[in-house]
Image (cartoon, rainbow, N blue to C red; front, side, top):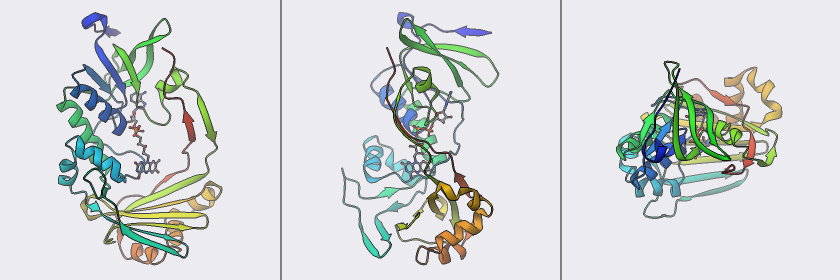
Length: 288
Ligand SMILES: Cc1cc2nc3c(=O)[nH]c(=O)nc-3n(C[C@H](O)[C@H](O)[C@H](O)COP(=O)(O)OP(=O)(O)OC[C@H]3O[C@@H](n4cnc5c(N)ncnc54)[C@H](O)[C@@H]3O)c2cc1C
């Protein structure tokens, strides 16, 4: 069964945004603040996590500040990172971030918090955000996309129409595929990441380590936890996953005293690995 809704000018919305995490919720919020009638949909619900580390670099933090959302990020308990240490095999750089647009710190809010905060801000701006809504088809009128067909959690198919449909549905974007947004640069997967959250591993700022065939990072995040992140060449993934935690810790042992500090703490969530991250640039639009 399918229900269709029709608003002014035959279109239900000015803009439909598919995907309501950092890109989609922020887009929906900004458009709604401009007075447009916006629908954002996501098959996920919020708050929820996603596979990603979550350093928001200083210019990104400046945007949150400009949008009036930085206080909420701070209130979530995400600590500021003002100082960075870069240890690149023999070369040590340490310093504070220069201020940018009134902001002088990087933040690493958990995606459970940041994404939900942006969804709340989109709703507060007047956007409608529908969770548990999976887009399955685009609606076309001639060569132009005029809407979406999706399914709610109850299995009900729904069609919504808009003057513009934005695909903010991630790296394997359904919208991009459906409009044939061409990939213009593509490389095979070259690296994988492995990251986790640790209690009792205090850090005074952010740290990056660069070693032959290895990059690692440690940043403070919510709940007094430290995110400890590792990236290694994909060729070693099968051997790595035979003993994920052991190999993770041994790799951190190559990063000054990071391994030792992490071993003295407690891992509070499972380690996540990402062996399937595509390296792709694609056109940002389709026909119409
Ligand atoms: C290991 C790793 C570490 C990273 N570290 C950082 C970092 O430290 N800092 C940083 O800035 N970036 C980092 N990134 C990149 C960051 O994760 C992405 O740039 C960011 O998540 C993209 O946000 P997005 O909103 O475009 O898409 P996503 O976060 O992927 O969200 C897309 C949304 O679309 C929804 N969706 C997809 N298909 C449909 C559909 N058919 N119908 C309805 N909804 C749909 C999904 O449910 C999802 O919620 C990292 C990425 C990885 C993999």
